[in-house]
Image (cartoon, rainbow over all chains, first blue to last red; front, top):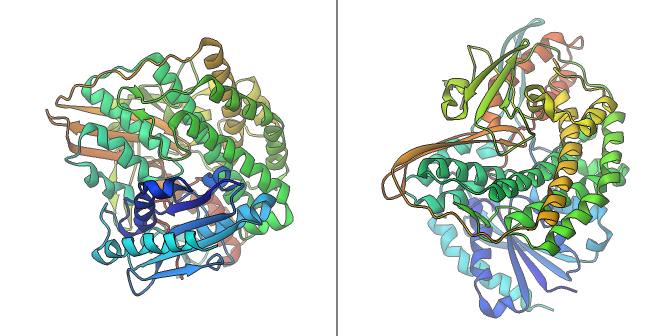
Length: 151
Length: 429
């Protein structure tokens, strides 16, 4: 088996949507973590990570979620619920892409997926996180470390 | 007056969709509403150094990141008077082939096919046709493998830099790509079988103008300095540096995407346009594929863009294999990058992204910092043409019930493979 994998999701050009990528960048620069965890940034294309996800016991995905209290963090052991209708013309949502991959890739069915979600209330063009979400990034990083310590 | 509203075509800040106003059976108004973030992203690069631009703009879209990166580099190098080596141009072309393979596989299998099979999503298709979805995933992985090998990452290439490549692929990496491409030959056949088996979708027919990068002697996504528009059999060319005389962008009240018209007429960009503008693209392998799909060029049916993507997918796989064979045979030199010296100037880069013409233009000051930028994406160029086809779809529909019209309108919009939802992807509760 390969080491655990952390995937940062979101577009850093779209303000708080880039929260997952910002947290992943911090984790990727942590030398102690580098020996036992792989960290990548996948932007908005979970399908592009299909190769990297295989043969992992555990994959953690850090993503932004729309909500009322920016900066709050939640952890889901199951994927966020999917809408019945595919709502987006251009691509699938991150949870939908993961569901699709797991549906047709037997080797991913035993992998444990955990979502670390950072609540944001807007995502507009800009390379800065809002103060609330920026302040939450160290807590997100610590939460990811906690998850990685969990056996 | 009745109104048909589809407001789930895009998720960029919740804006984007289709509105059709009907008076009896007559179509009074059609709007394709777009709030396209890319136009606002231009402000993000102002004041930045020339070597910071490509990594930023490649983030505009995760699917089209190589195209944004390389188009940006092309514009920057033109502005700074940098001439890259033939090997660099060749590797950049191969990188764009990889992008096209993964992008077309994504669109055809996961976005277009569910419409034809009357299923709400790719996940629903996977439940009934898992082999088809696995086929699409294999092709997408192959495109991502090419991107990762040449660009350094599966998305957002880091190897492509001003003046060349930071690191060139090794012989072992190229041999691995060659093996994967050879394994994909039966997948290409299976893909054609699948697309050929889909129900006919000929519910919109109207003469259409097409625009693409013109490459008279070769099939290129990256090279080429001339734009060509084909309309009613007439061909007109425009130097790439003079792209504004093709796009003639004008703001419209209902959309953040300006509308592009040439001599007052909308035009379509993308796969179908490329096949129309560059008949030489129809090599023996792609001509055979077009025949199997009953795709005739020029087409008056925008739904044929899906078939054109399938033809290009076959073509891209074959050309990528040829290119990798050549690199293995000739060897790849670790030649380093052409030195870049900052200077004031303006440069334009135009390439063929999977969805069509992509333009980047930058003006630099003497320190090599951006003072002005312009990015025009294929979806913006297609906006006026799409509205025209949406109108024709309603006018030509014998069925007038809302559900049928909505389905047809969404299929037309998806056939354009619009890239309006890729800049942000919040999970909405």
